[in-house]
Amino acid sequence: MNLTAVNRNVELICVGNELLIGKILNTNAHWLARRITSLGLLVRRITVVGDDLDEISSAIREAIQRKPLFIITTGGLGPTFDDKTLEGVAKAIGCELEENEEALEMIKRRYEQYAAEGRIKKVELTKYRIKMAMLPKGAKPLPNPVGTAPGVLVKHGDVNLIMLPGVPQEMMAIFDESIAPLLREAAGNMVFYEASLEVRGIPESDLAPLIERVMRENPYVYIKSHPKISEKTSHIELHFSTTSEDLNLAKQRIEKSIMQISELISDKGEKFCL
Image 1 (tube, rainbow, N blue to C red):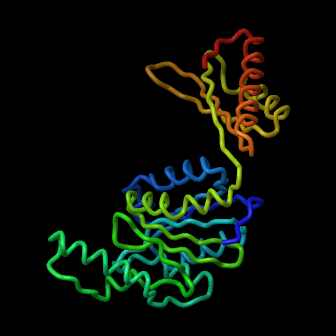
Image 2: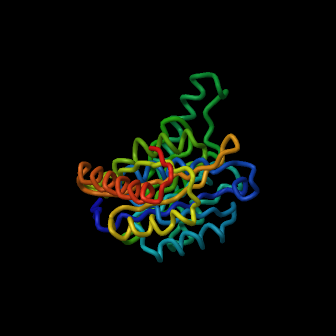
Image 3: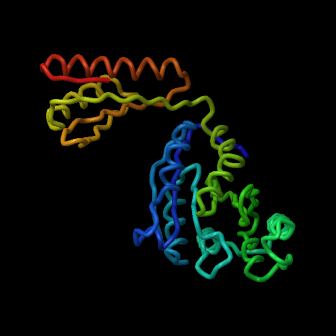
């Protein structure tokens, strides 16, 4: 793949009614956002949609219009009637689903393994199992080291569409084995660095102008305040982050910003701690 480090934007689309009704916590989005950021790319948007063909295809089309380098979906790759992600992707990019021989072979080998382990009685490629091998035309299946449904990669113009299962263990395994190398290549030498400062005894509204000043004077550093309450005491966590092609430079930027805001807080006579 001819990837460029200029566009480092990534969007996540998580599919599943269970997410929208609050039955399942969206740990996939949390895990992916952390991993993608740590690899030097930028997660620009996280969208959650239900198991609805029109909703899925609409979310994909809208994301494509923003031209991120990667769109990563989770969920909806299984054998049941409500697994509609691949159909939604095909509809969004204007192509048909077709039986992918490589994907079908992956699925067959997995069921052969299940049979050898005594988990199923015999290997039978039912229409529900074949459904997991129906991929958008031109798509590449990605091996699933721990489950049945393959991940899927399809390129649409300059956008790389990646579909991952919703089962967290499967999603993480496919990501680490097949996706992380692509993202690392896309990021080039970019590294993400972060640190936190804990501040007590000062309201967030009084911190706001100090944060604004430090960010203005350190344009490569992003500072986010997070009010915390624990054991009937309140404090504020300041999270500093930056991305750079040089790890030492990234550390220097963060250290300078922390020192500067610490001095500003001290000038106000407040307490702070690292």
